[in-house]
Every structure is written in structure tokens, then in C-alpha cells.
Image (cartoon, rainbow, N blue to C red; front, side):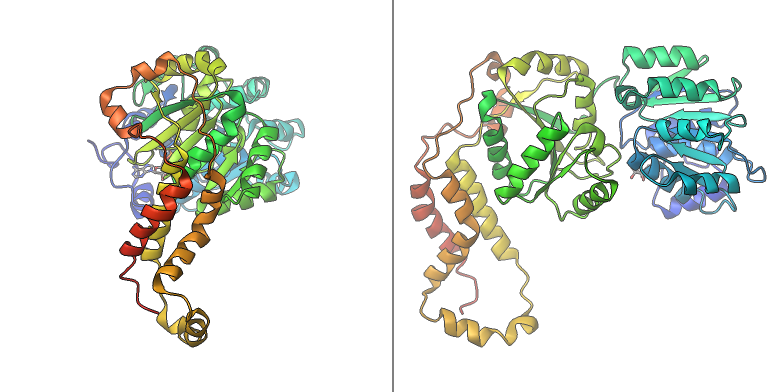
Length: 490
Ligand code: AMP
């Protein structure tokens, strides 16, 4: 493995990235940086989000800027405002020690006037969403005649979002003598076409195997009748009480409906889609980033640019129409060396799409068995006990209130008190699942594909399901009481 110095990265940039904790180049950086530091080098890089691609193209672009010329020298196109801000923010961080270097993000949904003012003051690198840049070009407030490098980041997503014409119009205004870099998670025929039209002798770099999703991700499918999809979603979420994940829906309407239902039923969920105002979207994303929100129900487009590394699960509430979107969705978990699970809840009609996805990602889905009511209650109870055991007691803060509390609870035995504490948290689940019929999983061949090892991991023993009331009222509460005997006596 080479160092950043050996790749030719300048001392000012190295100082900044070292401060950011970048010790060694990531594979995409090792491949792309030295190549781009040369002249006339076009690149098509197939790299997923999270592979370090921003620095791979960002560092050479920054290093090649002539700060004394206050004219746009590089242009980065990306699909969403969030990604635009993220890239601009990263470039600013990398260029902390390059005096006077200006990076400007331009994107829709915010004041065009202030962007025009910034452009007039002079910038070196423009990071733009195609629609807003075209608008600025039409107003003659930006000229691309001095651009020497163009990066198309998440090119496949820009094409999916219908930006093909805008991209064509933009590239027609950039001088032919330029470097063009195309980053995409997947290689589709459209990407191949763009690459053929706009890139010259491009070097093709693939990080990971072509079209393969992250190897840290386990892909699990639950096949249910269409009418049971929402119930199945709830069961899966309930079965993983520590879940921190995104539930992807196909449309804005479905996204809002699912989020509303979950919220009404007491889940820590919220929605993210294009019909929300920018301020609403920012607020939801921030809540999710700081983990004040456990479940984000989102459309593919809205979730782009949301830079969250440690999702435990991605849930596909139905499979995306465009099968390549699945790669993006599942790539949001299992990042930064962690493992993750991408769950698909599908009905039988979606089997064809599932096969297509398996072909693209080069991996088989594992058939998950729907959590039973008793299995869920058991998991939730254990979570309640775990939370109780871990709770931090601030003796000083509560000391003044304790005499009154002891007086009020005097008449309860220790066992009664524990039962009440547990029920306080647990009743929502026990009431919901009590006597509820299990979800039928239509039988199909996929079950036969499960390896024995996976079976042990994913499928619980097919035990006879006890009525939930029995499960929790006797054995479990006794278990709780015995495990909580260490709680200080009141
Ligand atoms: P990206 O694919 O550009 O979104 O980068 C994914 C994450 O990796 C970001 O949080 C970067 O800050 C981080 N990163 C990029 N390059 C390095 C590096 N060489 N060492 C450590 N972290 C890095």
C-alpha cells in the first residue's frame, strides 16, 4: 500500500487530511489520485458510496487549482442538494491549508441570488446539481469556458433522475480539452453510452467487483401476501429492537403513509421525501444522523447524500422499479467495515425482480422466516431488561424526590414493582401481539436455497408457538424478576 505522499498529494492537502484522520489511501484513491494528477486523463470509476471516492477525485482537483486565477477551473455535477453540500464541505476540509481556494456549491431550493453573488466574487471549483447550474448558465451568470476538469458523481443516479438532457447541455458548454471523470455505483447501458460520448480513452477503474454490492451486507427476503406487507414490516422492526435503519418505499405517497402509520403506532419513525420542504428534510435528516430517530422512511432520491455510516438494517418495502437502485439502497448498510442486513419484503409477483437483483449483485437472497408473536415478545422483553440494567442512576439528581416516591410505592412488593416497570414498556407489544394470527408466508422455491449454516443463523427452531399471554405472564416475568434481583431495594 502506498502513502498519500507517494501518490503525489501535496503537503498542504496532506496536512489537512491527516488532521481528518486519513492515515492511508483507500483503494479507489490509490488508483485514481496518481492517474488524475497527470494530464488529459479521463476515468470511469465504478465505486459505491462509502469507498472514499470524494477524496479520490477531490484531492487531485484541488491540487491542480491555480488559486491566483479567480475563475472556475473544475466542475463537479451530482444528483442532489445533500450530496452537493457534502462534496463541497469535504473539499473545503481538504483545502483548509490552501490559501484563498474557493469552492461553491450551487443547488436548487435555495436563493439563486446569493449563488450569483458568490459566482461574481470568483470561485475555483463549482459543485452543482444539473438543474440549477443550467439555470445559472441560461442567466449568463456563470461561464464554463475555463473549466478543465468535469466530474460526474453518482452519474447513474443523475440519469435515473432524468438529468440526461441537462448534462448534455452543460457538457456542450465545457471546452473539449478537459478531463472528464465519471463515478457510478453500477455500469448500465446508459452509463456506457455517456462514457462513450463524452470521455476519451477513459481508464476504467472498478473498486470491488463490477456491479457487486458490499460484501459486508447480508441480503434477506421475506415473501408475504401483498396485504400483509405492513404487518410484516412491523414484525421485522419489532424483532430487532435495536434497529437503526432506513425503510425504502417506492413513492412519496407510500413513504408518507407508512411513516404516518408507524408514528401513530408509537414507533420512533419519520418520513423523508421530495414533497417536504427543504427545512423539514434538513430537520429529519439531522434527527436521524444524531440517532434521535430510529427509523427513517424514505424515497430513494431523498435519501441520497444522507451520510450515515452505521445503519444496522436497510428495509426494502417492496423492491425498487429500477433494479440498480437496490445496489444503492443496500450499500447504505455494512459500511465502514461494519456488517449490515438489507431486508426485502416482497410479494410473489416481485420474485422476477428479485432474481434480476440477484443477478446484478452476484449474490443470493437468504429467505428469512417471519418472526412469530412469541419470538418478538421475547426479544422486546429482553430489551426492556437490558435497558433497565443499563440505566444510569444520577443519585444526586433524584435524591430529593425519593422519599415521596418511596412513600407512594410503599404498598407494592418488589415483584409487583418489577412487573409494573416491565409492563410499562412492554404492554404495547404484548397487547398488540396477544392472540394475533401469524403471517402466512407463501411457500416457494427460495426456501430450498437456504444453506444449513444460514438456517441456524436466521431461522428459529420451528417451535410450537405458545399463546403470547402465557409466554410473558409466567416464565418470562419470573425470569425478569430473577435477573433484576440486583436492583437496589426501594
Ligand atoms: P465517500 O465514499 O467519499 O463518501 O467517503 C466515505 C467515508 O470515508 C467518508 O466519511 C470519508 O471522510 C472517509 N474517508 C475517505 N478517505 C479516507 C481515508 N483515506 N482514510 C480514512 N477515511 C477516509
